[in-house]
Length: 332
Image 1 (tube, rainbow, N blue to C red):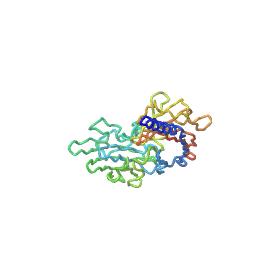
Image 2 (tube, helix red, strand yellow):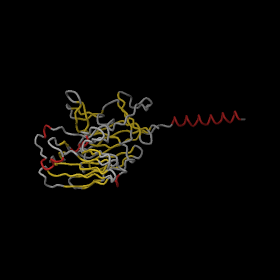
Image 3 (cartoon, rainbow, N blue to C red):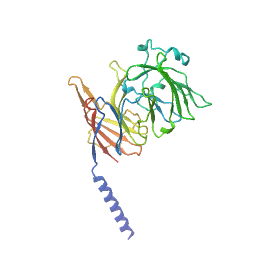
Image 4 (tube, rainbow, N blue to C red):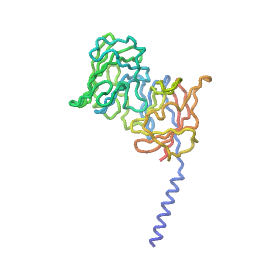
């Protein structure tokens, strides 16, 4: 009797397993619209779909909200540039100028992690965070550098990140026209926004911009950003691109020269680089003046719940409409 019962149970389990394997995977056709001139950023969740569409140029700098973070990014995708003022420390605030700025090195956000912004590109490691020095007594980061920032309208401001008050989780900073006029001393309190990766700030409105969804609500954002691409004479150079940047905690992988109908990710190496999907799934043909998709390439994305999705790009219309298309398949 026991043998028959065990055999029956095994038969049922095998039947269920076979049925599961026979269930066809569902391919979801998605269309993302950034708008003419790529006017918007689009936040997307692999599980739930579209999360938010927000104006891309409504911010200038942003502060990572964690109390132990010192990361400050700029809106590089909106043609902003940041430079360290090379001719003096914070005592030179009144004499900041742009003489020779054409020879200064522009600072860009990292294209591999959200935790390295343009403002901290000169960091030397703990306790030097690029824009300030960590105080081991107060745990504050105190600004020791001045910056010149070129805004979206190509005008210049001088910028001084004065302090990150770690206990209060607040940033205190000052900016002004190069001649000192229009000086603003402001504070951004990160505490109300710790459910998000960043809280944003606009120099035009002199106020915070609450534009980003909660950090657990999205997997990637389609945006314009600065990516390091191969240079003509070797090495890599910064260049503005349209692409996918994955959220913190998301892993992804790129497989080239494969059959796009394949769903096998068993030997795939997932990485945490936020630009693993990036922008090179498309190319621009100068002779035909048309965009084309990179063939035989698929992407796998593992979300925070460890579900794996396959992405295959199927269309890209460029700046006229800002429309791009992809097929999404949930694999587990």
